Amino acid sequence: MSSTAQLDPALVPATMAGLQIPIIDFAPFLAGNPAERAATAEAIGRACREIGFFYVINHGIEAALIADVYAQAKRFFDLPVAAKSTIAIENSACHRGWFQVGGENLDPAKQKAAGDLKEGIKIGRDLPATHSLVLAKTPLHGPNQWPENLPGWREVMQTYYDRMTGLGTEMLRAFAVSLNLDAHYFDRWLTSPMTTLGPLHYPPQRGPITEAQIGAGAHTDFGCLTLLAQDAVGGLQVRTKTGLWVEAPPVVGSFVVNIGDMMQRWTNDVFTSTLHRVVNVSGRERYSLPFFFDPDFSAEVAPIGPNPRYAPTTAGQYLLDKINESFAYHQDKTQ
Ligand code: OGA
Ligand code: NI
Image 1 (tube, rainbow, N blue to C red):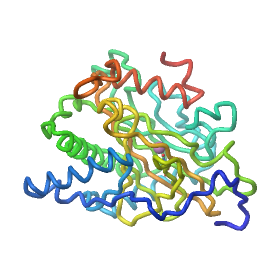
Image 2: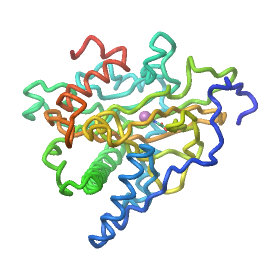
Image 3: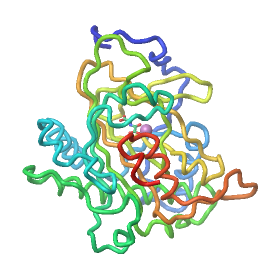
Image 4: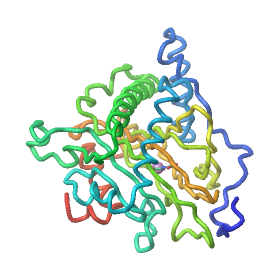
């Protein structure tokens, strides 16, 4: 911990002892025989039910590509505010572009307080104005805002976006197998999935640190699943079912995978969407690359199995409501 940080005791994580955020090797699911696929899916399903978090390794995304994405993200975040503002999210009709420190507030309980101590970029499915979903004025659909004068930036981000969409699709197949569904059960809702790459930059936080403002306020993710690359700095914390905050430390070569609220609802509370937060007490810059995987806007999210606890909804409406809660600029846009 940095000597300049004074942490509110409520923000200090408990010891790791006793926590089992499992590390799951995904290769046997991607390339194994049926028994290996089933065993891997079972381990994933168990983590989704018990903790809602796991690490995945051997996921097939090359380290060099991930390093390139970090480098390009940093290159953008290092620009002066005036340059970053040319792709400000406020200019986008579909929630794409850069948001400044404080622009997102992930903890609804601190709605009146300062937003999160992080800046970020939202990169979604890059659809031209002529695409049928854009012509139909589907909320959250349209073109990305790409920064100018950063050669190679767009290509690296787009390559990663496409590869992560593939990985997310495979992960949903593992979820389906673990739920005793056909492996391709979710595929029908993945025609134009609402996947979002959201590179984040957390400035160092010094002085007294309280729950009023931390890197990312305590929250659950909105959507189906999140695949997060985090750098070596640390600071991600997860709340266990017994109410303890524990660290989810960096694991080389891994993605942290977690379930979001939509997937909890879709599985009728079989999978659990777990609170987490970021407290960057390292005294250093922290970068992370969350990739949010959500199905088609029109996907009907009706609880799977008997005795549904929720009414059916659509993935699109569900996400819109959640974005309105955490981005002040968005609240008057798309009801
Ligand atoms: C998020 C999130 C964690 C991190 O963006 O939803 O939880 O380490 N990020 O940046
Ligand atoms: Ni999150």
